[in-house]
Length: 564
Image (cartoon, rainbow, N blue to C red; front, side, top):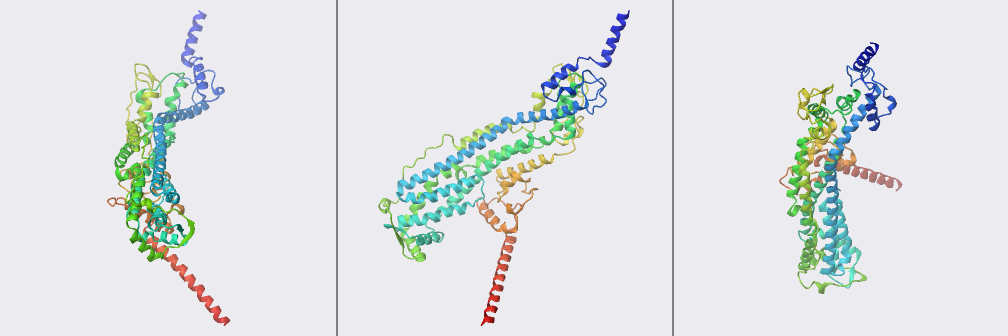
């Protein structure tokens, strides 16, 4: 009789207070996942009245400190999942960014080698004198491609200015001794008036600017793509989201249910709520992938960087040939500006005999790269296209592949208990859809995500050719938040070229870029001041300088008169 009573009492206690051994499994998982020290775990189930999120009617294997640790673990788990899910996309973009930069540099070196080889084979010793200006030209091209806001027109013209005295001394007016330094400088200074190379400087500058701008945009877009991924990988989760993740991931542990998984519908509601802001990137990311395809399609002909760089030596050879054909006219004009040649006593070898033919066709190496830029772009875009819906389906992908139960007849966690299926409404993706989310309250868009969306809008316009990048705007894509019209919320200081003193130079560069596409409107609002305002400020500075000079002059005159 007493034995039966003891058995019934034990069963009653087990029902009322839970199995005292069910916390052992919780302890193992807690220790295995390194959530925190096991000393904070209770030895047996206890009342959970002090818990904030993981409340239950039955007793709990959790304490308040454990709940806090679980919340940290839940946030860490989701960050790890986000980084894991984006790792292949991030690697794809990073690898190709490095590949494109490397290819640009290989093309630059190959083009420079071809140019020097052409000069050496066609013009003998003159090649050694031209090597310096050629190296400077290709260094400027490299800096331009890497993002420096250099004026292509300026550095190309500077190259031809430096080339003219050398060509004049060796081809037009060859002598046994070199031109004197002063005379050579005079010849260099009149290059733009004499125009010995015809329209070649303008043509080359236009081709480098067009193709280089496309190359720069490609690199800048890939940099931004990596920035987008880094931003979403480290998304700041809201307080409501963190609670929901804790409830979904670890609250079942408090009831000893360490092996349970959330129901699919429940998981979708939690993840779509937590990643609602991220889902807003979807439409702009899709457009980003499409815009890169548009840019790649336009990178042909004069916008094909490979074709332009590997054609520089041919343009240069034609330009020098033009100088040779117009030697008499050029000599007359140089004598008009600089007088007859003045030479210094340094012997040089004339190459006039080598230039008896009007056209010389050197056997320069034109061996193509193993993979052309076009092939690399095609392969990259084919792979990137697979990720165009990445942000729109991220929440669903995480639930299906990682988090949720497959609802294959097994019980699943609905946030409160184990059930056969989730019965509440499942909402869609995006901010607006979360108004009816029963699991996560979403107050509005994340400001960091809003900023990255602004940057995507702006780069998409540039990639599509709808807007011409102005001085500094490519850098602002990385450091400020730009919208589709080119406005930025980031601060702008003097170093950015936003003050009046820099305005004139800024506008000058803007006008040069705008020449590349006269059909594209460049009337977008930026921090840079209008050209008229800049001129006014420059003029006022000149007036102040002149006034000060006059004042000092008058003072000196008064002193001299007094002394006399």
